Length: 426
Image (cartoon, rainbow, N blue to C red; front, top):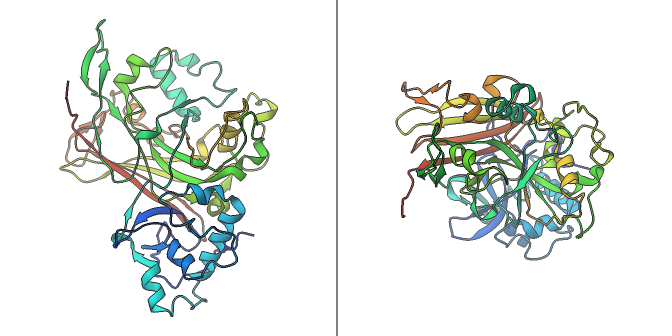
């Protein structure tokens, strides 16, 4: 049972009313402590909790864990331990920090070794990402893009309603929140021209996404049945899949995304488990035509996750420009993973699977500037009167995500990064 999700639980650690990280969340991440020690931990309220210290002090006895599982600098080994272990650890953490349990609360020496203020730690990339796949699973997004650049009556390609479209991305440039990026260089074809030019991208965009992280899921040649897919999903993060639209337009035919997408992808540092998201399951959109049997799912496989995007120019206040929701995705995570492996593709611990841009049905819910400004035709006004069609140098993009019902709020924190000027070295 998932006892950690009890909405009546309260922690003896102080948790603000609208915190993303109540005791019912218990996400997992990697951070550097004030003593320069890299450790795996969790978070409650504005406190980071050192799980390696908690284990060494004997608070995790009875759970099958290797002695060094939380001494690693990534979550990969812990993820490989499987869902039973993840659930046992979350349940135990919830018990340790429950307001009715004073064992750790009353041991000042242990508390000092285990608990840090969040501002005292530096968050790291939570997993070693061996492989990265990005899907294209929002019908609204695909329709908007198809309408802008092709025939509005045939906005979706013929295959889109039959398979979860995706591509293999570059894992070496996936970075944690807080790491700033440089404007990418590349070739573009200016409007009306027949010969490309080289220089900094002029149409840098964000893409509002989430991503799920897998465990060791199958052997080479084996597929993952759709009804078993969630057993192999450790949790989710927010993903800003940066995009250079002008570079993309020139290069994407015939093989799809390349330099326009591989210069940076930012993720939030805390991995929120599917167990924590259980109370927020909802039905996914009705699929017509009916998918092939290997993609047919039972039960609610989507989650009601509110998503927000903010832009902050260097000399202006932050502005909320997008409000979307994960539940709008046409293809679910289960369908994405089942399709990904139907040909026998091997999935490993720490693999990252991006959702694709998450756009909703209304203009304020579009998940990219390309859509929000309709390719630049409708600029967005900032608080200082400046206009934005795409991201300018020194703009900061922040994405937030949270679930909320009448009993509890479960959030992801945020993923934030500033766009810096290009460095020209050629």
